Image (cartoon, rainbow, N blue to C red):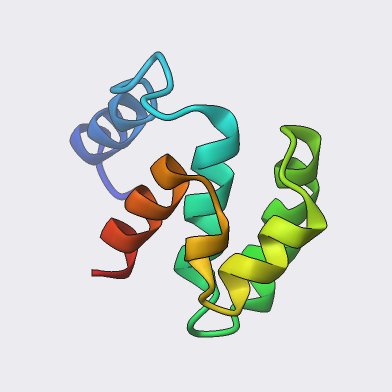
Length: 85
């Protein structure tokens, strides 16, 4: 960080959302879906373990990576459709 003002703003950003806005499972599905179209190995590697730890199944991962979001719950599919937009 070049200046204290930038550092202060950057550090504040990390505390801007103290409570998660999404259910942890849905959050991880969103993150994995964001990386899926570009086949982002980094995003998958960083989040697959977290996703599994909050209950995301291998079947759900396979479905979202293949774009078959209609195989997920109605809520999950709606959120992931929004992500795809």
